[in-house]
Image (tube, rainbow, N blue to C red; front, side):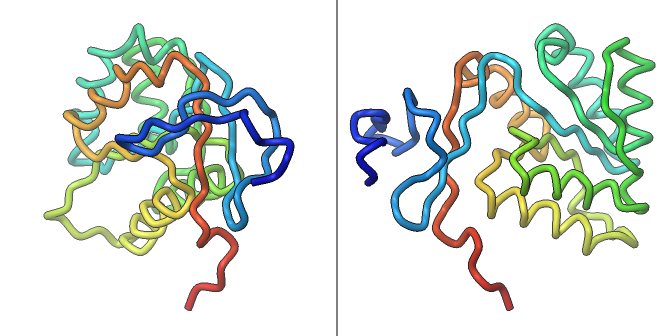
Length: 179
């Protein structure tokens, strides 16, 4: 641990997540880096396959007051639906098949997305399945929480961590060569 970080972070022994960060340093234990997100505004990406858009809209309607406190990103058609149905501003990227999933993945990799809500149907195949897999993979690589259904999204949006800074630890595989 670097001298600038001593005493800046404690961990909860039960889950080993950072619970307090007083330093703005992004350097960490060798092989790790940290990205601190200011509270309470989080950057949330919302994505849904066509057959799951209604589920996402129902969830978003139920959580409208919570969502409007955060910065929202979505693929194009999902973003338009959310804006129309909820009256909430959403930064719209390309549609999924036209690279929107990849744009969200790039934002995750550059630390511009704090968590991903991605309602997808594991029982349906899609022409852009490689993009879907890549998006899920990059979220895991960069240690970004992912909600793939209403239950996990409910737990995430209502978490006390939504109201405080959270220092995400990037696992040591960051920057490693991938076959």
